[in-house]
Image 1 (cartoon, one colour):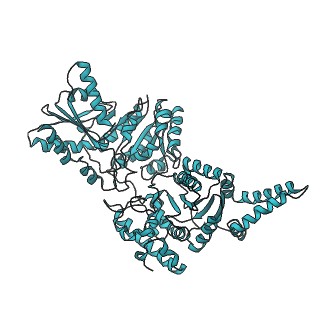
Image 2 (cartoon, one colour):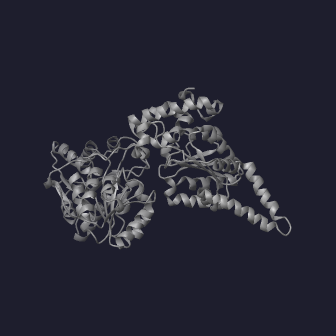
Image 3 (cartoon, one colour):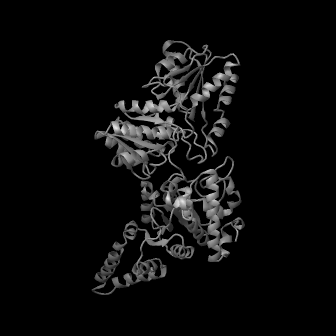
Length: 613
């Protein structure tokens, strides 16, 4: 049976289990080949192969809804729903998305690449299906990591309270898939996962209650006996206390066993969790052994990158200042905190996928005299904006937000572009927002942040390559730096990495007879008065940023220039704000996306020519 012959889930149901073993081997080989060539999520997908096959043999997608939390474990799902032939285009511009995509297939219900949300979707869909008297099943596949997020528990609590028919597949891949299981535990699993036996057990309790004189006592005794057994297996007790029946644990790499468990779960007229134990990276030695590959298929942080500089500076600051602590939301590797953890283990705190908690906890640490540095991707910080604003900003807590993957990030698609951070953070009163344009600027800003104790500080940097500059090209504090003198007609203000594109555009325009002034603002909030005063003397001011152009840095510059001009009773210069449009930007290479948006040197120069000539 060839993988390319699978045109949809129906093709799976006609195959023997022997054929499925070979199919699973083909799927793993295809994943390893594609991810090795184009990057992506390796370990999580290699671990979910048999589980995905079993799901699509038992449930009839898309009539039955299969939700993936998070979507980085959905590569196999894509292959089995008619997209195997397109898999070679994974994460390429115009090709297959790295996460579920509603535009790709009706089998993809949610475009879910932020963790801990699927159970809330499941509760909502089950509510809708119940009101329409449909027999459709809702299945949510949730990784054990996603269960560290508070929203997952909110969804689970409501599912249990509602009693609606949701199957929660807990894909537990945080440890070896094969724990020691006794004969007794195997018998209990078979007993608990059989809906007929469990219905008989429930009827027996009801009958016992109706026995005269002793019925109530007998029923309580039966329930206490069951509860005592359940306490031996605390997973069951936890879920069932929330009103969700627990089945498992099951071997997540045995298709036949999984099919039986899922088929049984589908018969219950109540919410059920099926606990499945899988092994990340299964079938590929390097991914089985490398804990980093298990998560996001990334290697060690590379030197010469912004993340590499941040990593080095955290170790330096940690050595100089014992009050410095580092916080991560389940990403100590890709945010560059592993070296800090190796040097200062108990001062590196991983809160799990819980960005809201991370922010407010950091505020508490700051209140207690520590200097917390929260390392987080831009896209994930947006999940905790309320805490940034009202817990951190309102208390003027000196938390340092170290924001990686800011701006256009590339292959991971709309949910991972970090285009909101400047719009949001510049609206927090007292928040200092810094944007380095080079490795040396980031180094300086990390040092300066230690001295900024009157409120929170945010430093944002991109995923893309960083440039290195000489010491005379580095500013300090909150002062902007003039990178190029012009003739008074045109002034560029290039935020962070966009400074380089502005300098290149200025070189092109010089050949056209226009000598542009170029400023590196360094601080997006507050804006430097000296920079604004100089910009006000120009005919045209062009701001360039890799965040949303509506409400971001350029908007703040334009408003500041208008206010200054009104106060002085003179005309303000024309201001052109260049940035990311208010759209969901698809995946692709960052440089290509920026060029398509007119945010490379050629695009910036072309815009200026149209305005000036």
